[in-house]
Length: 235
Image (cartoon, rainbow, N blue to C red; front, side, top):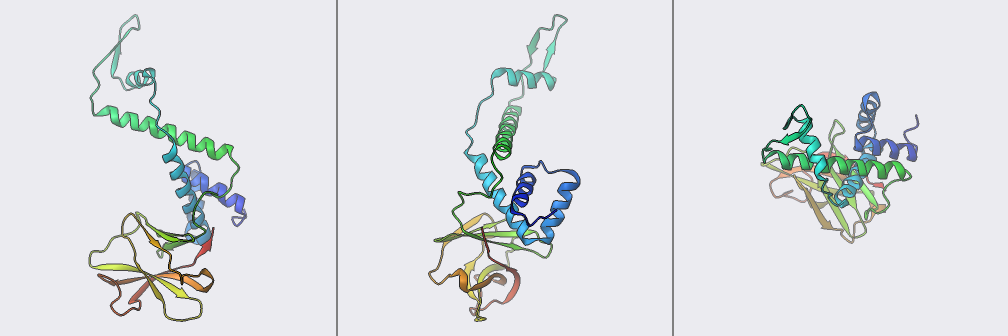
C-alpha cells in the first residue's frame, strides 16, 4: 500500500486515533509511525483535531430507562416471579463513573459518525500552517510544535520524562550554516504558546533542535548538548 498517498494516510491516521484500526493493521501502523516522520505528524494532526471535536459536543443526560437497564445488568436490582423489579440503593460513588462512561461512549460514537460520513481530509480549521514533531530515538513524539503566522504553540506529550536537574531548550537551526538561535525553554508538561519572532522565516530554517541545558537555559547562548533534531513540515 502506498502510505504516501494523502487520502490513505489521513484515513489510516483517523482510524488509528479513534481506535477502529485493530489487530495486525494497528500493529503495522504503529511500526510505520516509528519509521516515518510524515506518518507521525499526520497522526498528531488527527489527534488534535478529533480531541477538539469531542470537546465541542455538548453532554446529553440519558433518560431514566438507561440507568435502570444498567442497574439490572449490573445486578443492582432484584426481580420476583411476576418480573416486577425493585431498585436497590446504588452506591453514590458508582453514579459519576457510569455517567462519565455513557457520556464518553456517546462522544466516541458521534466522532466516529462524523469521520465516517465526512470526506476524509486533513483538518481545515487548524490555525497553524506548519508543524514539527520532536521525537526520541524510538520515534516516540515528545513535543508537537505548531507554527502559525503569529505564534509557536508547543505541546509536550506523556512520553516526555521531566527533569528537575536540567532544562530542555528549543533552537532554530539556520539553513545558511550559522549558529543556532534560541527560541526559549520547552515545557515539560502541558503546553506553551509564544509569539513568533519577526526573524523566524521558514525559508531560512533548516530544522528545529532541542538541547539539554543547565537549569535556566544555555549559559553561553549556544546549545550545550543537542538531543533531537526536528524538520519543519507544511500542513
